[in-house]
Amino acid sequence: MVQVNGKALPIAGKTVTEYLKGTSFDPMRIAVEKNGQIVPKRLYEETVLEDGDVVEVVSFVGGG
Image (cartoon, rainbow, N blue to C red):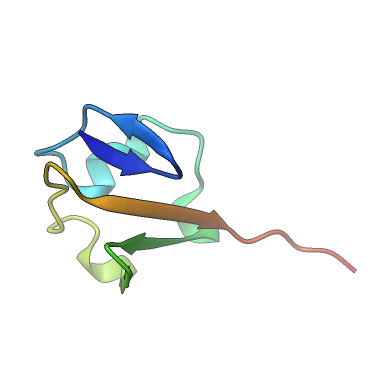
């Protein structure tokens, strides 16, 4: 199981890109942190989520 934003999900073995495709997150408007380290967008396709990982996905919201 992988913890994503506090929820345990059965997504171990998927890449960040594969996980994001099944969500409503807009990859252009988010940042992904895996085990306390920011994952650069260019590495989403090769970063594999592993059992026990803790992931935070943060959306950027415009305002004024």
